[in-house]
Length: 391
Ligand code: APR
Ligand code: PHB
Image (tube, rainbow, N blue to C red; front, side, top):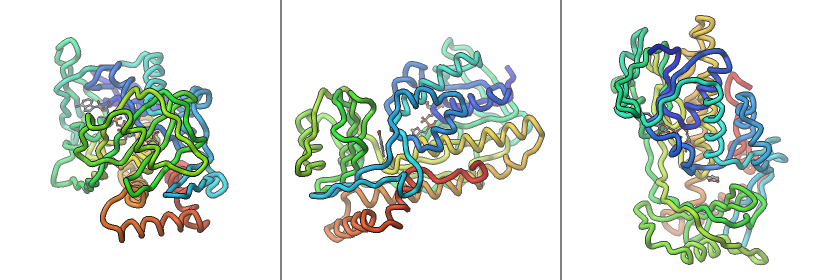
């Protein structure tokens, strides 16, 4: 089978790329190893930069964000005895949206189905071929056990942090940087109205805690735990007690509810360079991973894809390869900025090291809420820096 672009992975990166290409009249085939049901129900993070919302609107999937999402002016930063609101709109002129990645994925999948473009779910043995030639291909076994081969002009590796694509950039050209953090997050979803108007990021001697939300009736919480934490050691009561302790503030109470989902998330930073080799382009988690503290993972994937879609369209429609040639360098500059921000938020807010480290963290948090320039630096990064060449 032939197509213009073979896309590996139906996460937000692959699905959004497929949609932007379709809007420009470029056909693609999507190959995903999981089932469509699994992809639609996977619980992921939930913050969209306003630039990401704008790009999703342009891709035709903005309506539900506006109807079901919440626009937030900023976040609360907390440590024992103090909670401060940072107003991103005042500080940096930008808001953020609370809208689950799961919902973004569902919206994009529905649009793909309506477009009538081919997608293979439950594909196994996915392999890339000849990506440094003019006729690359992707082979796999489809859900019915049939061997498939897709020949394309371009292969887009959007297969997340465990996918095979980045390994097709030859080792002699590839460099990877990695940092594993000495803690993890225990994440829960609960059927309870949020106890806060906007997200609370809390530093506490027992460890970091985050209060997020999904709707008027569903809240999302995270607790810093050990990387090898045993989930069975956390009863519902223990989880609510830990959250109540870490978010404690005079005059404020945490409302509890039924916990409907729980999992432990590892915390890692990873960057791979280059993000292109021949006719293979990497986007999203296939090329980089950030710890979730800065809410950057989904937004970085969206920013990569905005650049990549434009590069592919100008190449395939006009024969102009300049944007494709610049893609990796431009994308990586933003990736490293967001990698730094995510690392900085993570190290400022999580308990690690000794009491000296704790004092430095508290001094940094004080600075962020007392100094306009320090607060603006956080606000500008969290709400999203511009995408070079696009805005
Ligand atoms: N073949 C086909 N598909 C694959 C393969 C494979 N061998 N390996 C992985 N995949 C699929 C995964 O099942 C997943 O659906 O690639 C998709 C990658 O999607 P994501 O992990 O969501 O990555 P991405 O689209 O880049 O989105 C980045 O997702 O993990 C979060 O924090 C991350 O928010 C960020 C966002
Ligand atoms: C979430 O709502 O899941 C969420 C929000 C902010 C983060 C990470 C996760 O920094």
